[in-house]
Image 1 (tube, one colour):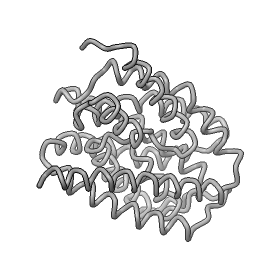
Image 2: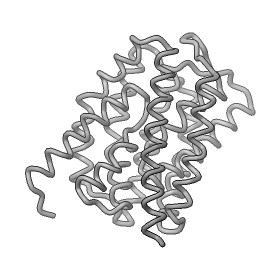
Image 3: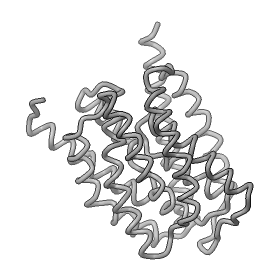
Image 4: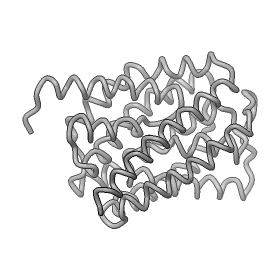
Length: 260
């Protein structure tokens, strides 16, 4: 595929912004990468989702290193999440051609509304830790499974799901939730990318350019997250989710109108 200099510029800019968001909020950045690829570079929705998931892998690696340096990663939780997410990512990449995108978008928007409300009710403590029991371990695996499916379907790393639920349901600190989320995204992104590669749903060159660009700003985002108070971090994350919800709602409405 022939690409103009303008294409590479947009890929780099997208990666730089996505990397900052990834480090700051513990997300993969796919929630920005996918619409950028679709609207700025005219990617097909499925190709954009697959390409985004591939770009998330290097982003997550840099983010994990940044959070691990300050001890803000729940390694056991990440293992449980990854066990479910690896399977879920394969299911999601398979379902990409099966489930109507509109149905999925509205269901995810409704989920975000519930999560946003919960975030304003819970203020995480920086010294909080996850209590590992049989039920919490099973819950983490199930959360990973659901997140993996969403990753394969939407091209997101799953941080918008994992981070708030680790805080609200499992009692993790805000920083540990973000670091753990990024660690889980590494096997999720690899698993989903393999599935998308088999089905021709990934542009490796674009994924590489975006992924390398994200690596230059992810550590800065993680540094900002560690400096600001947890209450402020939670509010900023909730605001970010509201922006995500508005973006998805606009896209869902447009899709509904186009389908008529």
